[in-house]
Length: 465
Ligand SMILES: Nc1ncnc2c1ncn2[C@@H]1O[C@H](COP(=O)(O)OP(=O)(O)OP(=O)(O)O)[C@@H](O)[C@H]1O
Image (cartoon, rainbow, N blue to C red):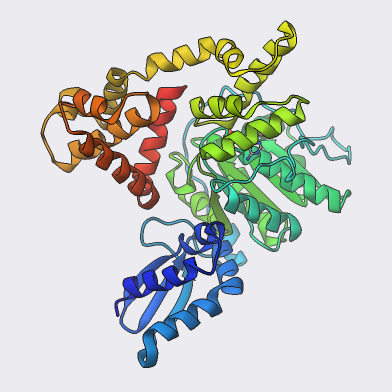
């Protein structure tokens, strides 16, 4: 029996034994490589590997043996991917400090930079900069962030030992900073004397420049190297900043060598950050690299309800569903919409009903509606894939046209109230079954092809913000 179908049979068996959540988190992310006599399973990272090994591996081997009878295959479990890399392999700490940095420029995030953590010269105190509200308890778990939360809990419980560095990545506003602070808060709760320091990468750069100007770079180094846990947010802002990367590289190495915990966040997979040195990219993947995905509808609703509860407001579920359906790609924006509804209710003294929420969010949603016309979706998709709108409407079936067309149809289904026949008509008079097929195909590809998933998310975000 070939590895793949054997594995499929094994998964079918597990489907009747495990919960959907367990299957999604631990079993389905495994990829199979076919080799004679060997069923090689690739886990996307060490975290999944360890978990699967401890909880399911024995059972998996049993099932394979049962399915195979006498000519049982060897089952191997290792970290790797036959799609795209997720985690680099560890290397010796001795190899850490041996290389030098390469040059580049500066760019700015436009985000507010949190207060500087550097204490006045000679001052021994540490500034955590942690938001006490960002805890594991206040973090709503869903399929999209389950793995990231589990990994974060593990790191908080085993600082410097479990996974170092922990690298959380995902689009903006999906909860990376929240989780990072949750780890810091949990570490401090267990050990109030722990030196936990959070800062945005721009702050690191600004402090380093200040230290260089004031001839206090040694103190700067000492400070960062003396922390127990260093949390650096949005490391994509290191891109192109040569000197900062070099400094960070050495700090990072020093911390890792002495088992101090480093936690990093980024808006994309480390290897995809342009302007970041290769040695940093590869080093970032030495511990555990975990993605936070776009939250699904149910999680968005649960987050809204949790935030409303925290604000002391009761949010009727039809209102929560309405907001969550309209704002899909960013939890921060979801919170913004909720804040607006709650504030309006407070000022006007009116109860929060569906009608009221529609009124309160009128401007925001009208702007979104304007962007979400079929014409605009077609134009945006065509520009993104560098093809013409007429190509999308044509009968051409080459992959470079057909795939964007499917993505555009799926986006139209997601973002407008058009029916399948209406979408078909708008895309060169196609049948509704073609549209249905396109939507299913895109959903399937988003699971199996990281590039399609990224294209879809980027387009969704462009069209809804
Ligand atoms: N699963 C969740 N449960 C509760 N709140 C969440 C969740 N995900 C995100 N949030 C909230 O959404 C807001 C934005 O999250 P956060 O700042 O962590 O995003 P981010 O991924 O770090 O974004 P950026 O890349 O822009 O820094 C925060 O207020 C956070 O509390």
